[in-house]
Image (cartoon, rainbow, N blue to C red):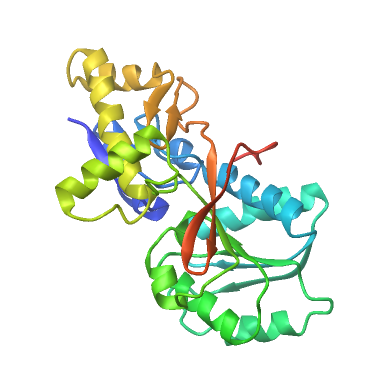
Length: 292
C-alpha cells in the first residue's frame, strides 16, 4: 500500500507517524514544512517545495521590489504560518532588511484592528507588509487593511492561493503578492499547465481553483512512476524508487529525491493580484535558502 494526501503540515504531523510505523510510503501533496521528513521518517516525501524556499523567494522579491522596511505578521496557531514567518524573517534580515513591527494573531481571527492600529502608528510607514496567513482569513485581513487605508503591498505564501481571497477582499483587490507552486492560467502557462487545465475543465466543468490541483495530479503520477520502477507496491521497493527519482517532469516543476533529500528543489511562482486578477509576477529560484 501507499498513501497520498494532505496540504497542511499539522495534518501530516498528526498522521504521518502512523504511516511511518506501518512502513507505508507517503507523499504529501502540499504540506510545505521542510522539517516533515526529519519529524516523521524516511517513508515521507514532499511533492512541493519547502516553506524555507518560498519564504526566501518572498523575502528576496519584496526586498528588491518594495524596500528594506517591513511590518511582519503571522498566524501563530499553525505550524505552516509559524515556520513560513520565521524563514521570511531570517532571509529578509540577512539581506539587510528591517522589521519595523513584528506581531502575531490567533488562528481563525476575524478582527485585525489591533494589528492595523500598531501598523498605522509606525513612522515611517513600512514599505510592505509580510503576512504569513492561512487561506480561511487572508481575504478578511486584506479587506480590513485596505478599508483602514493601509495600501502598501501585502506579501505572503501559498496560503493566499485561494479564490476566497479576492471573493472576500473585493474585485478591486490590488498590490497583493504571494508565492505558490504554479499559476493556473491557460493564456500564459506552460504547455503542461495548458493541457492540465483543459483536461481538468473537461472532467469537472470548471478551471482548477489553484495550484494544489496540479500538485495533486503530480503526486499521483509521481507515485505511479515510482511503483512502475519498483516493479510493484512492496513498501521498501517503492520507497527506494522514490529516493531514486531524478527530474520527474510535473505540472508544477521538476522533482528529484535522494536518500537524504525528500523535499524537492523546485522553482517558485510569484503571483501579483491587480484589480482582482491573478497575474504572473515571476518564476524565481532563491539566491539563498534558510536551513530547515
